[in-house]
Image (tube, rainbow, N blue to C red):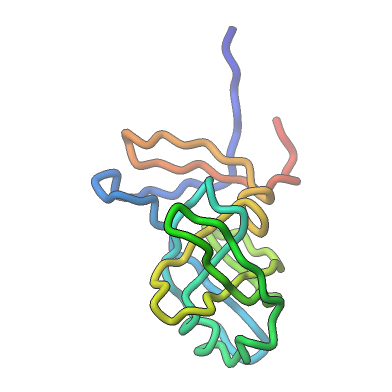
Length: 138
């Protein structure tokens, strides 16, 4: 039996890198910035470097504080509503910005991003196929 899936967007990435990097934009009424985030199917939430939230003008500690279990221990972050754009798709979501300034990665996790997309992945070729979850499936 075979199955066919249709997607609205394609993102090509370097399969030689140790991660799947995706260009993203974070937007607030106070401004916008563009950076790179990494697809992380094991991350429960979208989690970004603290400095990015500060560059957007956020008072980081005024957000919702939450701890996240990682293989290296608990990492804390403050959740803030942000508009996230990636691969031509834009979502209003909650992004957690790291409490610790030494946290230096940006992660696209399940809540806030993965649950909002349909995704196909051919890692050997470095190709990520994406559509909004609510897009009509053909």
